Image (cartoon, rainbow over all chains, first blue to last red; front, side, top):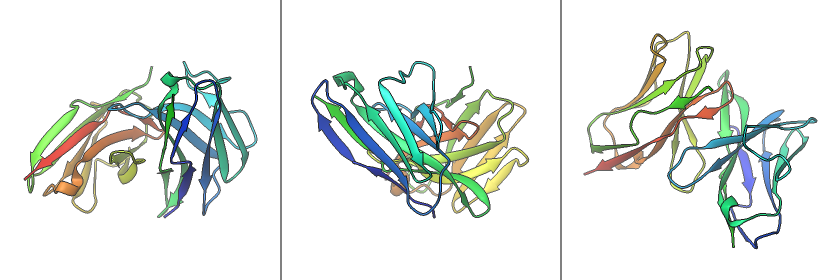
Length: 117
Length: 108
C-alpha cells in the first residue's frame, strides 16, 4: 500500500528553538496532508490541513504563526514548531489520502515524538 | 461543532472472546468512516472502512456496523488476540476527525 514517511521519529529541543517535522508520500502524490497532535492517552487532534501550493487550513485554537506548515510539493509537507515550549511536547502525526483498492484511504506517518526541555 | 466520539474509554476482554467497540458521530453529512488501530508510540493503522450506503462490512476477523439512523458505528473483533491490544479510533473522513479512542486490553 501507499507509504507516508515522517521524519524525525523523535526530537528533543531546547525551549525557544524551532523544530521542523517532515512528512513525505513515498509512492504517491498527495495534494492534501493532515497534521495531528496527540497527547498521552488522548485522541489525535487535527491541527491543520496542508494543501499543496496554497495556505494551510488551521483548526480552531491552533496558532498558525506558531505551527508553520509548508506544502511546497505533491510529496512533501513540513510542520515547523516555532519557539517551542515544554507544553508543545507531544506526538505529532501526519497523514495523506491515497487510492487503495479503488477506495480512498488515509495513510499515516510513523509519528514524531517532540520533547521540549 | 461536529464530533466523533466513543462511548467507552477502556475495554478488557479475554483472549478468544469477541470485542465490540462503539463510536458515535454527529455530522449527518458524513458518508465515509474508517476504523484505525494505534499501538503505543506509533501512527494509526487502517483496519476497515465503510461507506454510508452500507450497513455492514466484513474483513478478516473484523466487522464494522453502521447505523445511520442513530449515527452510530461499531467495530467487532472476533476471537480477540493479544496482538489486538491497542487503542482503536473511528474517523469521519470528511475532515479526518478522530473520536476519543477506546483502549482494548486482552488478557489470557
